[in-house]
Amino acid sequence: MLIATLIAADTLKKGELSSAQDCLVQAGLIVGTSSSILDDRAADICFNGDMVIAREALTSWAENIDVAVQPAANRRKKLLISDMDSTMITVECIDELADYAGIKAQIAEITEQAMQGELDFEEALRGRVALLAGLNISAIEECLADRVKTMPGAEVLVRTMRDNGAKTILVSGGFTAFANPVARHIGFDRAEANILGETDGKLSGELAGSVVDANRKAEILQAAVNEHQLSMSDCIAVGDGANDIPMIEKAGLGVAYRAKPKAADAANVAINHNDLSALLYIQGIPSSEWVAV
Image (cartoon, rainbow, N blue to C red; front, side, top):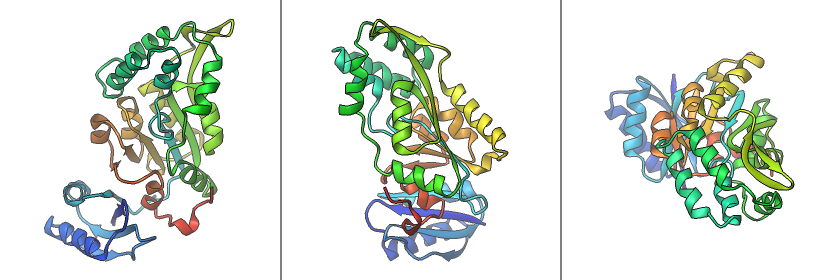
């Protein structure tokens, strides 16, 4: 049994639910029951057939509606692993930090190319960090206070999943100086990111230790699965950039959140119209069960 979940940006109408069922039938799939519309926004359609055909048909049909197609089994995930910048928070921290050095436009252009998968991630990261050499460490605290904002739905997603017993990990190609406080604020169990080097209260322009890149993110996912004796089908991975692709492809449910094209193509689900609470509807968790924030 497969489940297609529809999540509307505003209100999901009964006619839209019926139209989605017709879309699946026209694609040659056997449609069973549909749920009632939850919170005026989301509904499930149970069906049998080919998951890829269903996903393609509904994605082509949908307008201002996000669609997730997945097996009914293991729907509620036991591990969430997520990117930070432009996923759990609204900004790219390195770009905002660069603004304090007066070079935001220069660094933001490199960041965009790296997230699109057009540049080697580690080379691009080290190059951008080198340009920040000499910036006062105090700029990090200013940036955290003034620029870093939590993505809508992030706290309710993470805290509700933890309340349901899931493990939650924040992984970032950015920096521990941002990832650690962000993880504590949102409610993640832990975070892993890169360490900015510093000397005499200023950034050294170097990184301390190895780099958290695309492969490292996937390694963290695999290690967590092993540690907690899970299967990949128990896991959901969320990200927006090219350096998230390996973990998105590895997890049982890979989600591209308002993502770059390459990441969206790699994912099972693309969320473009809703906030992160959509990931709770995808797991069959109605708002009556969400942790209040």
